[in-house]
Image 1 (spheres, rainbow, N blue to C red):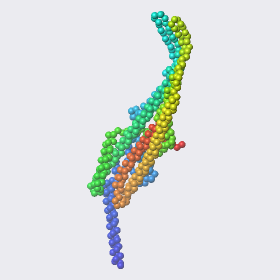
Image 2 (cartoon, rainbow, N blue to C red):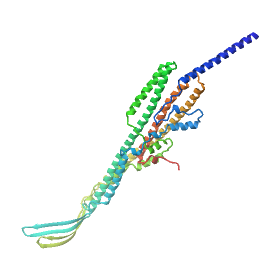
Image 3 (cartoon, helix red, strand yellow):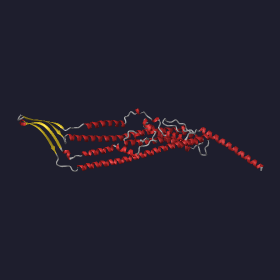
Image 4 (tube, helix red, strand yellow):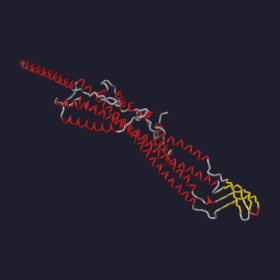
Length: 459
């Protein structure tokens, strides 16, 4: 019995010793591996980009700090900002401002003038050569209706309405052109973001490819893994080359500030935005102009002519006359269908206005819904980055204390997380641009002077 117990204890001691030796051996191999192949690739990126894998939070960071770090990673920094003074090309907004000033001066001048006040000087002279007699006429005539004062006021009023209509149509076209220009400038900013994205991704993948190639030579990874990294690098290089040759630009300070708070702002109620869009719509103002002009449909009263004259007249045979008179022309047939035509014409324009309001309602509601969707999407992307930061902490801890499990490589996980973080960050920046695009379209619909006019602020 004593011999068996001694034999058992001897074998237990041997097993424990072997286990201790194997543990130290594994630890030394892992440490050597980690020393040979660093866990994260230190990269120098474009100034726009906050370093991701190289500047992850330390292990002791709180959850709230991670949230703030993730939120900051989805914001634009001042490297994308440009000085407004550098934009020497006159924008459509500047052209519109000049047109509005000209329009105001033109309409004011047009309203203050009349093409005729209906008062005319009369003069006539005839010489009868054979009989050596003459006659002449000198006087004044006041044309009240038709060709006189009344008709002049009517013509000038129609001219004012016609001019206002032309300006409404011009403004409407210019607003569309301004939106197209704003969207084009936003497209240039998006190119800027894509360029920074693929610059950083290319830099990271180049160094990761070198790391994986060395690991494959040491037998720590497969040829398929290296092929996949090389494929991703080629794809990123092609896109980087494309955006490097494309036009791009930054944003001014006001736009930068707006872009960086888009996840917090709240639009005014949709009913308020619809009311703004309808009250400022040039298309609706055009219909009102048409309705007002309908009253100028020809009427029988337009053919009434009243002229008052006073003159001194000398006829042949030396007869002189001082004349005061009035001339009246009244049509004997009345146009009984005119009012029906005017009412029908007004109804047509009112139906058109109703359709315009209905479409404005749809467009505002669509943009309002899309704004809320993209805003929630941005918040979700910030949470995705929070998760990536948390995973980074976890894998750094595993790498530091060598507590990995079988088939679990913290160094490889950190590389994958870094790549995902680069993509997630730029996807969030593009979402900000999508939200800003919606704001530009809402500004065009509501004729708002600035983006802040669309937001609701707590009292």
